[in-house]
Image (tube, rainbow, N blue to C red; front, side, top):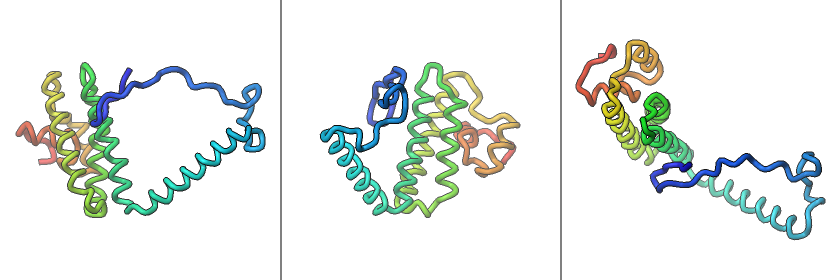
Length: 172
């Protein structure tokens, strides 16, 4: 199995996780139970983790949030790339991305414009996948009322799908 990202396909190991390293399935060993080499490696890992936290704190929150929001874009692409496309699941990811962008808007700083572009790309990909599978790209009446309650008209994958089709929804 593999995971699709904009950077390419990545293999995914589906083997079960290994058992805890402690004796008889107990808690993992403490620092005192480690060999000198293992202790040095654990301390180096802790230093690296601390350094990553400091680097993260140097960034504006909008940049950090944008990086996480792009994972919704990746998830939508993954679902849409399946055969057949998993459009319902993709809609959840696209709507989540759109909700972040719409709700935070200019608070995202320089990340706002690229994220808006990502929303539009994902929505267009959704419309194309829906057309390929013969699904209606527009929402059903139940989806329209539910989707527009929080996100606003046209902000959901369904709303954009409808706009791309040139059709009308209950939102107008």
